[in-house]
Image 1 (cartoon, rainbow, N blue to C red):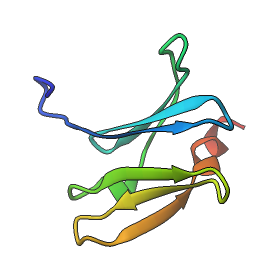
Image 2: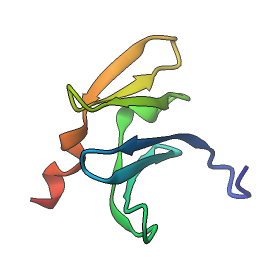
Image 3: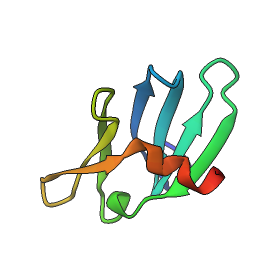
Length: 85
């Protein structure tokens, strides 16, 4: 638990890209696992209202979010990198 009141809502490995995705509050951070350097971060609306990062599928390259209403929502992982191109 963090003192700031922001909770960790999921950590997922992306083995294809050799990256880790960390959902903290309403933000997903893309982290290099060897250096722990944050390479990219992006606010994701699917994390609003207590949603959480629940998984990554390497075949479809989708991130899975568990919404506060109990439904699973998909979001393309490559959207994390669209702002850096």
